[in-house]
Image (cartoon, rainbow over all chains, first blue to last red):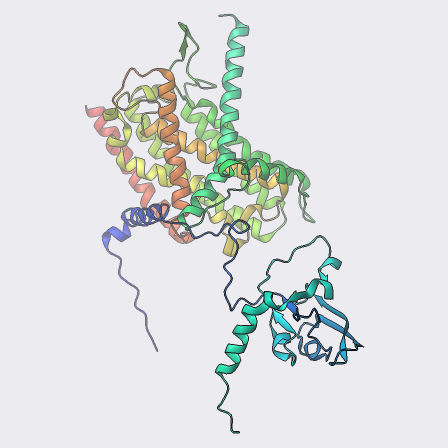
Length: 172
Length: 337
């Protein structure tokens, strides 16, 4: 058992006034020190490779969507924010989403969809701002979610780097 | 000077002083947030107007348009009367504070910048200052809420305890200057050497501490002790009624700062310039007052809150005997020399 003995106060501490003045001098000095406030809209958040913002769909160089509507991200989503309807396509991958909605009001930006995706089709972008005038406008459809691959490249590179870091040497 | 002229001059003085006090109260809310921000490495409100100077206006508009809630089972009349009773006494007491010596413009004497030059100014201030407790008590009681009631009970115990110290320290100054008239008290300390802060340092310290307790400010703001009592006596108040309590609190601070300056810092007396014109005197008065207003904010953002038993012990076991002894010694010395 730990017994904490109460500290015996000295006379100047019992008088309060000297200690009060000491405390006041500290706060007075702090008034002139540099401020740490970030003036948000004018000074946007510093975005790094790691920044995990809102999920976005990758659009390849030939303007096709990488998603094959397998539904793994829909299943992985803990907030049930993703809704996918699959459809056929003439492309070699045979399937692509007809509808791909993410309810940004439900999305918790956890990144599970990014981890679940087998086709590297969904990535967490560095877009963070999310404000609108209605709830409907914040249910993003495919048009709002599509981003060219180049815009997401920083995050893609980061995820690839992190994934390879934990790989054990191949047995083959 | 005809009756009408006298009436007009008094009216102008009243409007100027009353308007200034309300403005100061509004600006103090901004200053409170600004200084607290600076002391915490932040910037504070800076969006509304230049340097955020229009923030009080925006706040005021917001308060007016907010919904007013009256809790179930509240005493409707007292619930409405309490904010008024909290805001009025502080504004009324400021009427006797003399801000300048006689104002002379173009050879005409308009008298001192004070609404009233009462011979018993000190008594008037103490009498009305004692009324301020009604707003707090009625507000807490009429809300029909346990937190409000506890907050107001604490506030009343505290204000009564510290009123004694306040009165006894003021009495020491009254003994020194031989008058209850605030203008004469100021005139009794014409130069820096005559300021009562030098002759009554103990009374000065006790008076300043007692003003903090009297205005329910940190570190003695038990009536609105957030972690224990939600918001204290104004927990159930909203919108402009709530704002009235704050106007009252900030007016009381302004008033107490003025009173400190009048009693201990020579009022309008300008250091090392005895025959200063009235506007310089006014500036000196305002400068001294703002120092004490800043002290209110400074202390609030520096010190932790006392415990209630510590507050009571300090008031009854330390300040009361000290103030009595101080008064006794002062009286003895004044009558001897």
